[in-house]
Length: 418
Image 1 (cartoon, one colour):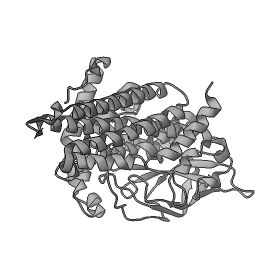
Image 2 (cartoon, one colour):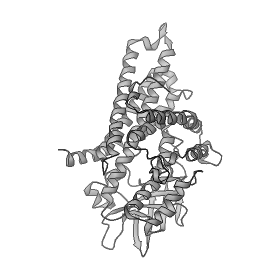
Image 3 (cartoon, one colour):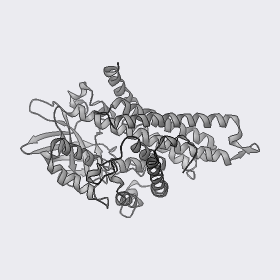
């Protein structure tokens, strides 16, 4: 592991061990697999049977890493706060696409557990959460189905009261109550992470009522139910190991116990989900920024130009130090947010947004500077930095486009800051 940082003194021996174990997993498993999958021309090949993608998922579940955030009393490791940041940063350092894909795989089940704990919903626990907890073969994979063909990052503003009172502004997917069931219709866009491989989706929708749509909701939906179909995986610029694809719902019937958030609670739940997801993105792309900086630093030490390594040229030294400052500032912000939001209830979404917006921008800027330092080699697919640059660029859009997220964060700041 790189030793250029001396801030590991902030970590306890247990956290250092966690960091080292996660780094090994990222270095030996996810990064090589991500590089291999990045070379595939057809995204269908990424998810086909026999792909290394499935080897990574099975290894992740076999090592029980999918239970990291679950409570200890049900077999999890209760990784929270700074511990969760340590894990996310190392996973981002290894491969942001796998970090996001593996993280999203647990979202429906984590929300199902939270609902079961709050409401005593035994059915969601028995039929959804417990099978995931017992899984060691990656048979239960989740996705977060929120973005739609006609609604993109505006869904991130759904927790603002103006949107919460008018869900049609954010969701075209509709759900209506029919006896003991709910019936869902609509489509989620090709930006759904794990959309083509997931077994369960955490679906956001507007609630249809006879007198109009009055709220939004969230449900866990098994994706093998009648009325569900999917599109092809998105063929995209970067993060190619993170498969993304459309999901279509045509009068899909689910039991009422699978609905986690009903009328009146969406603003709270939406804020909570946004805060946690955005905070995770901030930590992950701190790792990407660090990876790009490490690649640049190592290259500048060995690349000779003008009779000496280019790290001895002053302009290169200045650029390297500016990159170092950005990585460190991203780490401090995203760590602070992870620690604060692990104990705040609800988590503070404006901090999660700040972490995501700032750290993904830093990752892109540091990766761009690294490409510049590599010169022509920075554009070559033979070097990791070319991939890191593409992966970082994708982050400015996913989990909410940064410009729209910043507007949502500003609204919350104005409303709450004293």
